[in-house]
Length: 165
Length: 165
DNA sequence: ACTGTAAATGTTATAACATAACAATATTAT
DNA sequence: ATAATATTGTTATGTTATAACATTTACAGT
Ligand SMILES: [Zn+2]
Ligand SMILES: [Zn+2]
Ligand SMILES: [Zn+2]
Ligand SMILES: [Zn+2]
Figure 1 (cartoon, rainbow over the protein chains, first blue to last red):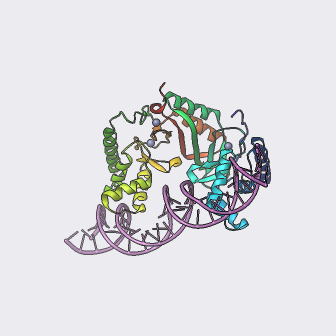
Figure 2 (figure 1 turned 30 degrees about the vertical axis):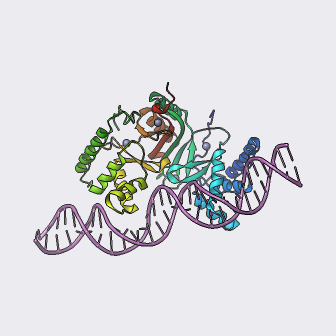
Figure 3 (figure 1 turned 45 degrees about the vertical axis):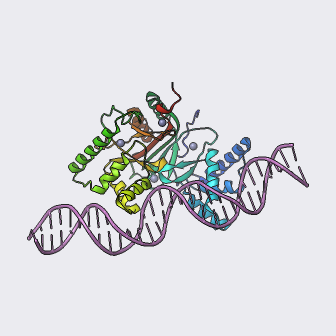
């Protein structure tokens, strides 16, 4: 992770042009998969689109029921395989505290994000912060622990849901 | 959280006197529940003991099967109710990335810990770090997000499991 | 001690999340 | 074309968690 000054989502969940989010995400995904010679098959692509339908984390069974509606009966492995693929490619992140998945706007670079999850509206914003990363690495090093992967999820209230101010 | 200089566990999982961990934890729990006028009933107490049997996070159904062994058939709600109570009182923490629970050595004070989870031996150490807390709070404030609760879990290799060095 | 109330536990069923195992099909390389 | 590999289909099951309602227990006020 070099330089993400931009935040994936600034909580303007209702006011931004989300069609553009989706369009960009899908284009990035296509390009990335092409460059990596991995196949973003129709099923995988559709699951990614469904996850990108909002900035709310989506459960596997939500995806499943949408797929079933549009393509006839679909079984859980179909969804979980697609999710696995998308995770491997960094195209989505899993929100552990919700058992749900959310699209990543910066799949090209390996990174460990921080998710700010609004308990009011349900939106999740992925942000990055060098100071946090550094503090975690330093702490781990102090204790002789070698970090490999991490989960950082903060629940609270987003600016859109705060009683003004 | 004022001042936890000490780490709950320093990864000496096999070499420390774990009987003492358990004993202390149970005494602290008894005292805390008394002071709060909440009831650490035999069932709740036993679940807490079972969770404290090691520094490895324990799944609800692991607890369930142990209870079933020792007390005859037990149903999931029994365990989940006890876990809920113990969580409310801060006596245990839930590790989201493992769907498992681990004892807290500092239940008296509200705090947000950081869990270092060894993917090799499975132990989980709860640590605290002011720099991390501060960095997260600062980042949230910058974005206008009001944090209320958080999950911070780092998976990796603990010092005991590193190929020496 | 009796009794009303609230808290805790028991019980049954089911919801929600996830994977194992194997068969069938599609893609790619030779 | 053929073989090897990747993907998808299908069935069954494993794992984690909660809803709903009955029963029992603890406890405060009389
Ligand atoms: Zn991301
Ligand atoms: Zn919100
Ligand atoms: Zn703790
Ligand atoms: Zn270890």
